[in-house]
Image (cartoon, rainbow, N blue to C red; front, side, top):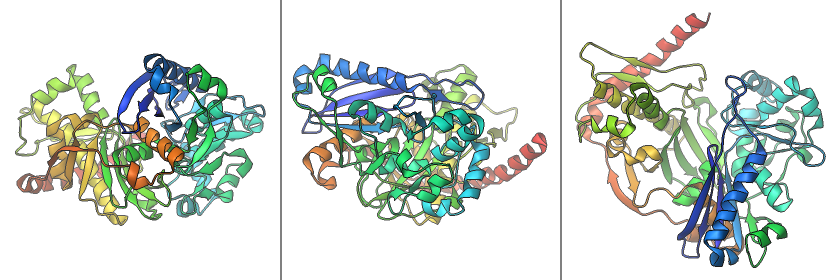
Length: 489
């Protein structure tokens, strides 16, 4: 038996998985985000610990026989957060999260101090990453920075509480801007740019490797016969890829969640920061990935539902069962800025082409198409980075809408596979990593693809019809950018 734990931003989830990779049980515990100032997002690590105890206690109560047989545990976690620890391992301040933008000015400073950062770390410095956050702390909370002895990413802090060991995996570490991603080791130059040394950070292991053992007191609390081995684990997207079986070069998935991700597994480090493409380590050895991100995917539809006062399902029900022509309206889904390809945190969204005859259904369809146009930008940016994507598994809440997936397919040109049983999520991927850490089984043996329910392919007529609105969509960005520059002047 194996346990996978996923520390998300809105909830912590744990799953119990048997040797046949069947999920025996699962529990989740909600988490809250604190925003003390506009653009700031923080969480108290102690809340993660409370959530962990809650879900594990619940699993132990519901499945005592199976929990007794657990031999391995794996962790998946939200990336980029900065947990600062003092000399005695005490938390010095709330964790600054991945979606916190206070360190925007410090990104330029980091790249000034470390001119080869994009080449070594594989990514443009963005305020969500960990390294700029430390420069911000040094500038604005110097007493906290001076007291900092260790910096851990969120799931590494949970491991520290569970095992007493400070260890991190390659996929999560790659999102810090401190990792030499090609060589899979900490970069002394990147650390020096933020006033840190290697002894301030955890040891590094592969996600499939053993990385400590659960404290005996916790093993007894949860009725385990032996102390389980902890796996190196994974960052959230890498854990999701492991759960989907996206572990071979060229395998890909499209996540239509709150934000949107198009992931491609690669067999080597292939940075392309100028196109807003992320290049990170995978959670399995000798493997990397490229990833493009659209910041407002399913959250665009959620915003439109709130604005209209309708449920998302009711808005979708107003659309025809089969889309045969583009909406007369074009929507730019830049509600919170955009990552790929623009790397523009200041840009904001818009509707264009409104007329007296515009209907609510036209605007709903435009929202779905605008997100699809954004994904088309990601597909093209990945192609510029050397990864030609032709098909992908589609996951996330938006994948429940067959209409939306069909639009995505025709706009992007991808064949999109809807899964038979829905996505298993990062916790399931973490359980797979736990299994490999215990048994030493090969990645290809454990990380099997998920069964597919259906494949939606591009409609050639609709793809042709989308060419004009896609071109219009792309012309709108520089026009809107220049307008916003004038407004903020």
